[in-house]
Length: 220
Image 1: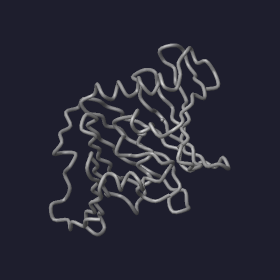
Image 2: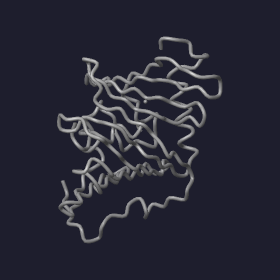
Image 3: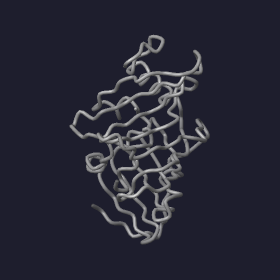
């Protein structure tokens, strides 16, 4: 799993039972509406993921302003990626590499084409409906009592990529709580928990876009 593929997971950033009448599209619509109603969103994404063929701990801090499709992702782990930062908006993706003090700049379209992991476009982390528009999404089931249920969705890319992404959605707040990626053999490639979920904390565009001023700029 390459570095850029990880951001497919910030949602992320996601019918076999009736699940109280809810469908996968109903759930996606409610998550999307909750995101659109938020001025800003931040959360921690942590767990284990396969990086360069080995399982490693992953710990990310994600901040987004959904109305602007502006996303900032900062690595805390693994150690090899610690303090690396990604900033994406509608036009470009900037990746700050801590060890070399460089910022690579890539167009948003090129970055989306190379997003990789399950084909998810991490630049759409604040727009669930748009992010999942090229996927077939089904509802696997739900658990819990009405008002406190958790729904499990499974997204399969129409592009033909084989990995599937499973997303757990909490009815309370209509937000993702867990993301899992599995391959065709059933092997788990990533299993991540979403915590410290906050909305409307006053995040600004300048704060999300801030990168070291002395970094070398490399345009790709």
